[in-house]
Amino acid sequence: MIPEPYRVLKRRLPNGLRTFIVETPYLHTATVALYVRTGSRHENPKNNGLSHFLEHMLYRGSTGYRSSFELNSALEAEGGSLYAETSRDYSLFQVSTRPSGVPGVLRILGDLFTGPLLEDIESERQMILEEILEDLDDRGRLVNISDVARAKVWGDHPLGYPITGPARNVRRFSPSDLRTHFRRYFGARNLVLCVGGRVQRARVEKHVVEAFRGLSSGKAVQLRNVKPRMDGPSLCCVSSDAAQSNVQIHFHAVGAEHKDAAPLAMLIRMLDDGLATPLHYRVCDQKGLAYHVAADLETFHDASLFEIEAGCSPGKLSALMAEILSILDEFRREVPDTGALERVKKRYVEDLEAGYDDVVGLCGLVGGGALFSRQPLTPAERVRRMAAVTSAQVHRVAQTVFQRIGMTVTIVGKIDRKQVADVRRQLRRF
Image (spheres, rainbow, N blue to C red):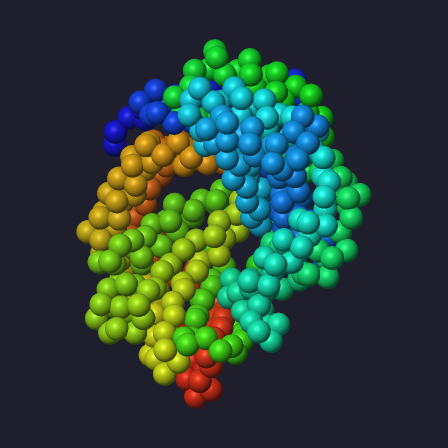
């Protein structure tokens, strides 16, 4: 593996803010990223959607930048623009810019996070209600398959909540709700700041201190580990006027810190890591059952969801499911070929090395990783763990993960009842 060409330097400010500087002198851009431990997982039925609403409201300005226009104009003058997202267990606020723009970006974000206005709530409320409509069909039915599936997979646990929250909550949220949520989750001890790119610690650190020393300490938020539901197989169908039947298959799996995390990562790559791996090759190339099929892993510190997603014409649904389940069953029954495992290990290393040129990805690796781990793994440490994975370990993890009792299948779109009945029989036999 190519040695890591960057340097990571870390510091904790007196208020508790953990700061990482990723020096990449070989690049010509820079990124400032703030990671916050708040998302839909931190909510309850009454305040579900509040983290996402607050993310939107932070665009509305601060004490030093009295409107969204002033805030965004200031960031754009530094060569960047604010990108923000809310996930299930974290929120991200990020500005990519030229290296000379970093001090200004830090000053602006410091002002925003120490003194957000949280004003003009009605305009933002209407925008979010429009965003929610994108997940509904013309009859008001939820057709966002990811939200439908996760509600079924996680049940009443907050991991099953929609990130936007329900419209009834969005219509009710008040400025007081937003300020309470901000005070609870946006303290320095619950955040990680990462500055990466063509920057130098000596020049950046003083700007970090000046920008964020006024941030209140707050408390680091801790959550209880989730207990997966193991009462499958479960099948959920939502009919809509779409031309295809879209399907997601989910299995419960271990979290990022579990001893089987590395074999699990290799398992998903052996299933879907390019056009020559079984999922695409057999489903698409050989049988033409779908235009696109993919496997992914949604990982949390304490659990993960192993996901397979595809779409097909309604009359092919049964054949599509049969082929996917056959592939998974082969991984359960047979020890994977050692040569195939070595190929995906090699591709894993190549992907990590390619990431050296991606400053946003490096900030996520370092800063995002530090949000849930005191000592995030370096690329070299990740490679060592993956290199130690054996075919027998991948086989054991496949047997553990691909169980009927941990499986949920969600179908959204055009529903062919005969096809769905056959899918139900397949699940009982799996």
